[in-house]
View (cartoon, rainbow, N blue to C red):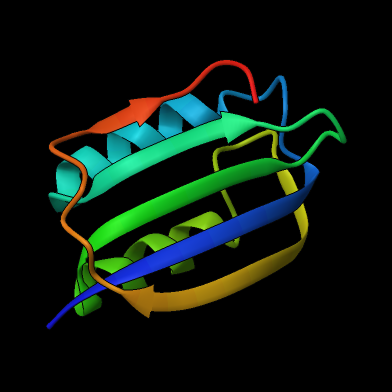
Length: 93
């Protein structure tokens, strides 16, 4: 079943290759969407794909790459829209 997962990841998640690593794992899992840094120091990510793959990326995001420290994740599950054709790193807000 296809779903959408929106995350706000808080902690030490900027300056530790969190976005690039998130993109790599998302592409490996065949997910679509984007990831970006937020001005408050958090990382925001929006994924679309199969629910089992979204569950895997959520588990990965709870730890992130080495050097990251995730203190909290806000997650919101939603209906799949199919609006993305790849997974990107976004710049700006």
